[in-house]
Image (cartoon, rainbow, N blue to C red; front, side, top):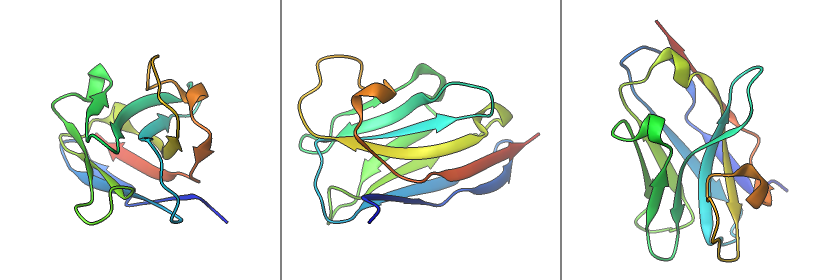
Length: 125
């Protein structure tokens, strides 16, 4: 049984928008974070949320363009609204989650125990 399921990827032209969704199989998590991995590159953290407080965190390259949010009815359903997309945003996007308080960098993949299968985002110039 997959614990995290992503949806919403697709192909758009530069400057376009996409909205990704991530839902859980009913399990709750303290942190839920979006990562991405382009071919030949390391997986990088994009944006995340601490589900209890709603506090968010972003990598610098997406600040002002991407917005992470929680569903009003289900705090463990999250969205990533991606605007002003660029070709360099092209990657497989993964939703990841963990429990337990994090004092370190919340955008490091090694801190996350549960992962989705990913959804592809392709931005053409």
